[in-house]
Length: 445
Image 1 (tube, rainbow, N blue to C red):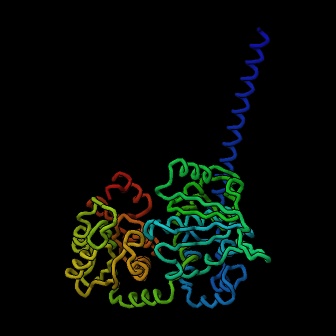
Image 2: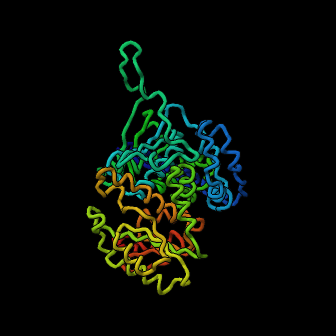
Image 3: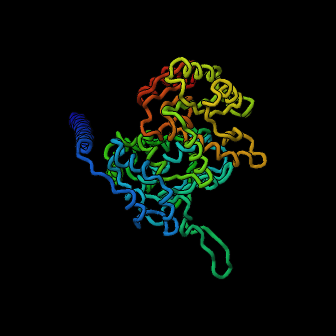
């Protein structure tokens, strides 16, 4: 009996030593990673390769015919994010653009309701980042309510190329069959909670994600922001460093979004002409931009109800009139409510800049006679002008306004956000988080 108790105590003691040692090793590992990241943060960063050289590089996904678009790519915007912005300085664009593992793909899909343009961008950027982490080739398939290629072309990264080897054709019977293994992941807002939790944990902790999702082609429908999970996965930190994303503090959607957007998208020629036309109508030194999303209204009757925005237009217009700047300032307006447009027209007259066209919501307007598809020109023109025209931005607490504003070279300079009847001055992401925290995580906004 005494021998048995002694063995039991020794076993318990050995287990305690083992767990204590494991904790010490893990903490040392975390500390070494932190020290390495601190060194990377302080290390002088090299300027990235000039855009002109990257456009002619064989590592880009653009084929020879497509490289002629280089003349239409705005090198100033890419140069700013790669060479002049401290938080994206030193990112290795060549590594991002080079082909990944053969016959391994990650495809963002939207074939039914996926949310508005802001929601879709959140999902697209998350999947693009995961594709870089897993060394998979990235593609986009959006067909709802119409094909994305009607409004966008690839800029530097070709997300439209077909998936090589997906279909095999029998030479005798001519029957077609899938040649690559496939899997569909759905983590949209209406997905089961256990699915959302499981996917989040895999991205956050797992060291071998490709062995869990081992299929050749992963199709993924989502509007989630997974950057927090990716930044905390220690096992893929080295992979991110190969792209010049040196620390976990740089793996944030708000930091990488404007650069990734320029890498992925350029409007088709017709929309780009609209953007250039409205930019040319700027006549004063100062442009004040107001993005007013009211929610359900007679213009978009099937939109969701947003009770916290009942007085949003009057609050924003009064704020512009009482506090903002010079009488000669022009006001650019984008809104989901035609009545708001008429109010602004009466109030500001010739000082108002407004993109003509019918107001629609990409996911909530009825696509009668392809109306939503036709009016996507206005949607994308509005979105681009928010990032390319504004000196002062006053926006709703919405993805469309927030992502559009992030494309400004200095997105937190003169940025104001409407929430729960008030206008907040936002000088950093911390201010935005605090504003939402004070208003039930943004539910009152």
